Image (cartoon, rainbow, N blue to C red):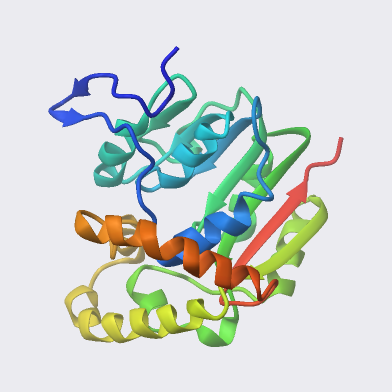
Length: 259
């Protein structure tokens, strides 16, 4: 049987891909940390806001059965090229997804900060999880670090660790685990993104947050020769990040739905 990453023809003029898509440095460090929290082979996973599908593809490559939702049409068209027997991508938001089935795990990476009513969203996400299943989410860390990049890409907020813990517990989750990731490279990358954003904010100043959110997953993505370079650089950055556990400007959280 073909895997999700073998060439399986083309559709709408967009060829299927046969390799895992490259990650930007911050996303690579996020995946390095998140992969230890996610279930593996045989698990059913719903990813909310999968963007271009890089994490969904990696979860499927580990043997999970992944359903990935992406409301942005442009990102969806890229993500759907990764589809295969273990990965399905849909061009909808979670509110349009049928209530059944439920999943062993729901995950959302860099999504919750884009939602105005994060508490209501988290409760709805929890309704998609089987009893005893888990949720894994990531978000930008530290409220005081909200900057030009956050504004440009449509973040309503950043989170202190206790904010995220309380949010999960108030939604009914148990056994909450919170960790930071991405030090020491993450703060430098964030500084560079903020400098870029300050120059570009004038171009998007009149855009509503929904439009900024829709385009956020397409900004500074590694493509072409840059993607090849990231495949060489990212392992070094991830290894460096491992030397500084629970430090950095990114937050990861895992929690369980009671049985």
